[in-house]
Length: 308
Image (cartoon, rainbow, N blue to C red; front, top):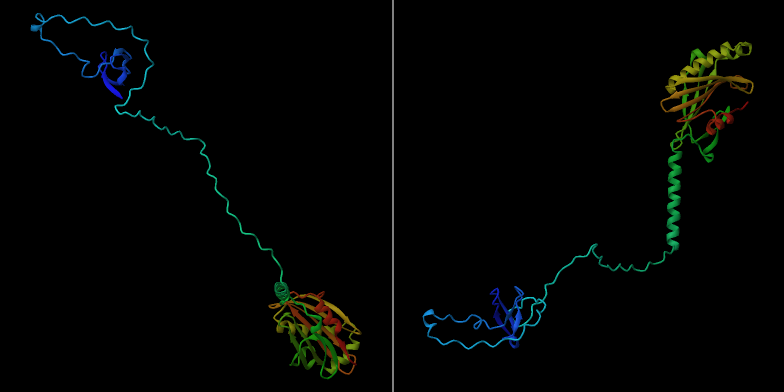
């Protein structure tokens, strides 16, 4: 058990074990070695001066043994019996330690398998996409499938030509300037290909037919062809960009290229005086990007024939 005492040097209280009372002890405050006396006995009672003369002298205090060497300084003890606990010091670490996080466990993957149904659906999608692509690429591109062509023969059997589709028939009015006394026109229009094909003819005036063999400079023939060319230009609302002379067996004529509101047009106007039907024939084709080298144009012009 600890007993409170006072330092006789600095006057501050401190505690010593009960067994150390009356013995030298080091003051934890001023480090002086003093006699450990209880708090009540450390300060002697004062004696009045009036009584000092009459009082008997106190017996001498017995001498104390020499003081031991000073003990190492100790921390002041608490008034409680239990020693004080040292304060807890928080020392942060840098860099901070990462807290391990458990990675999520992924579910096992199911192996991918192609079922017959999936294969059939995939092939169907490929076929549909291919068909749609071909459809849009060929729409109004001026191409005619080989299976769409068939030979058309004039109702009177005078001529034949390969066209696409069923033609519509209309009359060709007489034109005095070209010596044409009337005829027929047959026209086919392809909705998907965007191609229009026509075959027309006009019966020639007998007077012109008799003069053509003598027309070595082709004056009469050129006049008749020029008049019909201008009439076709008005009908097609076209602008002539090129004109060349062409041969057809023993006959001759002109090939005319035009720009029209619907694309381009190529026509051949032929003066055919041989046979039972002397006529001026007109074969033409119109499409968005048609040229003389286009398969449709070449097949059309090369398939035309006159039946004697």
